[in-house]
Length: 217
Length: 217
DNA sequence: AACTAATCAGGGGTAATAAG
DNA sequence: CTTATTACCCCTGATTAGTT
Image 1 (tube, rainbow over the protein chains, first blue to last red):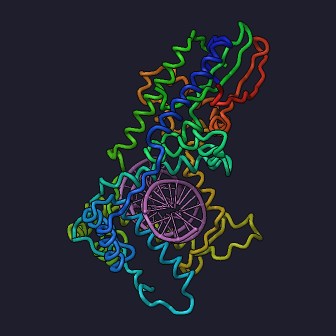
Image 2 (cartoon, rainbow over the protein chains, first blue to last red; image 1 turned 90 degrees about the vertical axis):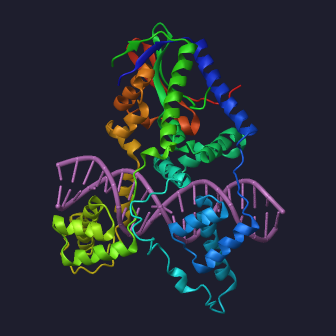
Image 3 (cartoon, chains in turn red, cyan, brown, orange; image 1 turned 30 degrees about the vertical axis):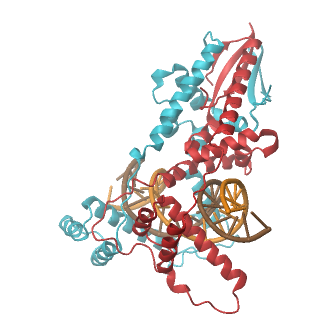
């Protein structure tokens, strides 16, 4: 073990704690103010019409189709994708709920045909630069898994400590989700402390891990 | 233990935090910049068909064959090469996996070095779940791995990009590497605890954890 | 309260890369 | 080259939360 020894007084410790508190406070405030809400795009009737038609054609459109739809509807590709996912889920749900008597042949098994299988020839090494949303998600995934590894419920504890006594934390995590900074925040929770050896008096030391918040100003 | 004494004030601490913040900001930015993403080419169904046929003919095509294929499929030669490599690997993998179809819990010890050489029927739907799970965990929790073994380049990158900006940061990463600080850090996220080693005398230490409420007033 | 957009947790397939 | 691993992209199914 290799520590950095820092002479520090109790007063200093209090200050540090206070500073951390202020940081959290600041975070809570800024969250309250602004981006607390999960953005929910409202799909216009016109876009909805387009999507529905596309769904008729294929319930699992390939990327190109989604791209085109996104352009056509002025929606984010991610939004289009989610719409299709939810739509499929809905259909499945409805079918299970209501329909066990008549085998609604419509949109039955055959709609399975999907998945690429075309591409206007050639478009080989294409990558979609406009797919940031999903990509961020992917980035954050391992960290989340890492979090949940140590303790099955650790993740929820970390990110959403039971609402009541720390509303701010929960909302902070939401904010992270939205802004895509999530990818780093779990690291803070898990690994980002500063191990220090604090000298309480001239010969009493304390090794401490101080948490910090990256949003601190 | 090797200690280095550093006079420090609250201002210093703030600086440290700030430096770390900047580092994370930098990281977040670079993460969010779609710049350093591994591009993934999607091979069209048509090209795939061509490749598969070629594979039937020869699983290790010579260079000029690959060249022709690349032209025909409009793919990069490198892509074609990698495709064949992955294809061979897949075939081999399937063949090996085919030998483990019934994974009853009895005779657990042996199954690891399970021979194979069975009929290459490819059901493969059932793989040893626990094996896959653990493997997956290992794979996707590099940070934990780092915790145990103290050597992970990714984490190093996380902790010390622009180490020049913040000497403290470098030291912190050293601490992480050598002390396995990760093992305690989840407490920060979960409970905002503070693991401390109290030096009762100059050479007698005691480990303790101090609770810490971030919303302390 | 219903509907549904968005998120989360997990799994599959495979292109790309690392390690040998 | 092979083998092992990682990263990307897609999905389902359950849940959360914004709108009306």
